[in-house]
Length: 229
Length: 229
DNA sequence: TATCGATGTTTGTTATAACAAACAACAAGA
DNA sequence: TCTTGTTGTTTGTTATAACAAACATCGATA
Image 1 (cartoon, rainbow over the protein chains, first blue to last red):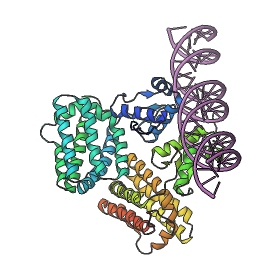
Image 2: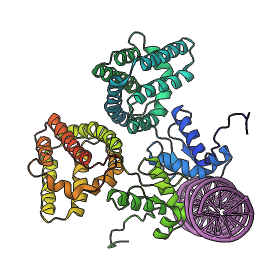
Image 3: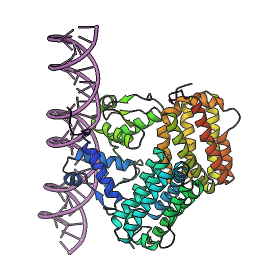
Image 4: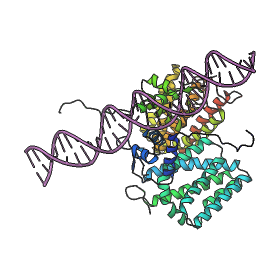
């Protein structure tokens, strides 16, 4: 077997896993309208599989609180009400603040430089008005910070919170980033981490979350629903 | 239809839901040995249903991080390693501390009295050496506190964390409660809530969690696994 | 015209069978 | 005796069909 090409491990990922990932990314990208109901057979036809793996994926997303249970047991995309958003924000400030704190106490020069590089990429994408990829880079940046905390359970819970807020966050990102002229919380977070200042990293992270929450709150109608600006 | 007995809404709960609840309670009660693998067909036979609803329940528990994925995609009961326990403790102090804080700022006299009543019941059960029901009352007490915060998302995440720590917590509860002679953190939490002192409620809640963590840590062997005392 | 009831359709739920991968047991050959 | 190949079993995965509940449609009757 000498001279062979390096072979990768073959891993047949289950169809339910693929369906889960597809739905997850769609939710994170805000490609499902809040309030719309997802039917198993429709999704199954779209994915080209049977209802079994689709039901598996949907069932898990419901268990994670990412999808809600409609009137007949149907899965519906939740439209985030303003008080639910306040709850998510509360938990996010606690958890992401703590994660940023831990990241600052653990990160070295190498990790800080990596974060700074990501910041540059984000700025470039904003200048190019490419908000779709900004949404992705923005997410990657935050989770890079939280990964530095080396507490996988924490990262997992945070990811779940982002999934819950996903449909709304992506809704307003284009307008929101344009309103952020002066204060760049992300740069401040990276600075704090580079200096090993955990308390500051926590403070700036919490401020970043609260400011986004305040913006979303300003868009809420009298019924508490958040709509595009 | 006059003079009829009040009829309750008939709700056929899906079998997958029942299986989920059964597994959940078994995990919380520590009735599964850490490290043991759960096979779908065996569980299905035990519950008297087909593998479909069982798979549904197991799949959800895996997604929640309560069960782990074994070598061949099988579900195994995680044996909590000491560093994973440290991570859970970190998140628990943040979240349950915040929940206790919110509870203290919202609770009135009626709610405080309710908590005090629960404390009395717990003390009586300890005197009777009935640790199985103490485990249940203890859980109810804590979640009564967190329910007062009126942040369902927060309660849900905390419940998930308890589920993860369940197999280990229930393992040591009998011995642990006997070591607690003087300091009764639970009474201190209720006092703080009754006085509306959020900061103190948070502090005592965190201390309660950290002390349990320290006890568990003292039981860990050189491999990091926690075994019964 | 409006209301009520029957009927067909949609949709989540469940059992079952077929499938594939991995493990276990065992026998044959070096 | 040790290794190797084969066979049978276990187990997660997936498709399919049957089922039940709810909804929609439509026609008949008052």
